[in-house]
Image (cartoon, rainbow, N blue to C red; front, side, top):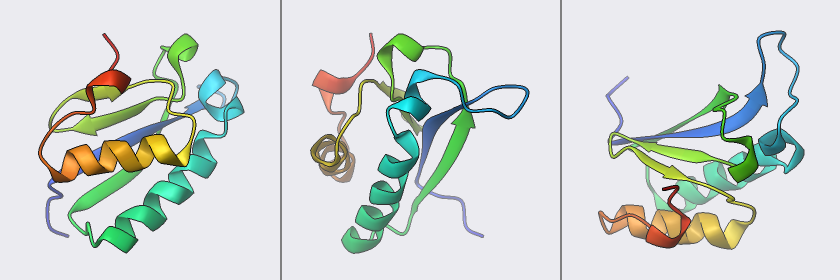
Length: 102
């Protein structure tokens, strides 16, 4: 496997016991992940990897998507339009400023 240009981490709210309990999971972060996978495929962005994570401990700001190596932390990503805007910015080599956690 070749090293990806970008790695997107999506909080799935899993805790040490394995049970999803947090806000990201309750706000359907896993369904957003499916859309994200489909959209990356449609755009031909084969150099982007997606992974789910355990709880990222910013539950009040979820769902959370983290982009590496840039280190962008996006919060309250709740719909497909927001994901489209993040991917548009990523393709342009920029951050989607209004969704960044500060």
